Image 1 (cartoon, one colour):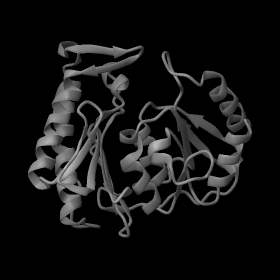
Image 2: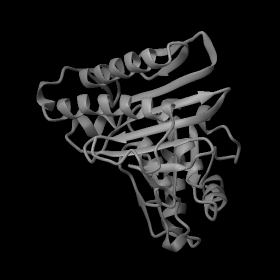
Image 3: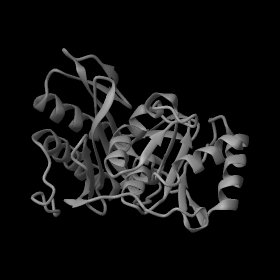
Amino acid sequence: MRFNRTAGAGSALINVMMATAEKAGRSLVRGFGDIEKLQVAKKGPADFVSEADRRAEEIIFNELSKARPDFGFLMEERGEITGADTSNRWIVDPLDGTLNFLHGLPHFAVSIGLERDSKMFAGVIYEPVGDQMFWAERGTGAYLNGRRLRVSSRRALDESVFATGIPFLGRDGHAPFLAQLERVMAASAGVRRFGSAALDLAYVAAGRYEGFWEQGLKPWDVAAGIVIVREAGGFVSDFAGRDKALNSGEIVAANGNLHDTLRKLLRSS
């Protein structure tokens, strides 16, 4: 690992999460360098799972089970596993940005969140190609490779860039999304779609985007990102402004100046 652990060093919990994400990330990078040999099984329309997903998830499950044997899991491939400690649950996406990965696009991440007493407590998002480790623990701030993160301070929509996810084949909501996109693109400096909700949230925390919205998501897509954005000073909610982004399938994340404005734009469309 090339980043400095000593600057903004995390707790023992965060260090376990970072080490696990890095190990899984190394496995993904090996697969990414040899995409043509991956055994790919189709799960559904435009939704794929590869040998690389399963290998990374196995690494994460084994490492976190050794470190915290009583914690439960919610994982994209394995589903829910109840632990003896019912207060703590890992929420894991071993490869967020699978379609990018399979097409040779170097924009994907490992996402590990810890839910404690039904609230997000800690999160790690690791982008292995660029060795970018985003992490946060409740009450201690958000960091990228040891550097403290803060959300953007921009206030004007026409100076702001937003990220989103586009519903694809097999997903509902195409027409509502187009209405949302029309409203946001008419008011903003730009809209981006890079194909990894976890990294979109990490980029909001880093001030690279002013905000992000998407529908049709699963808890493992957003769990780590929720706590990272909040610890960077941002706001996260569902479209109605409730603290239900983890389980509602919809999320609006932005800096404090623009969160409500973006949310109202989306609701009005």
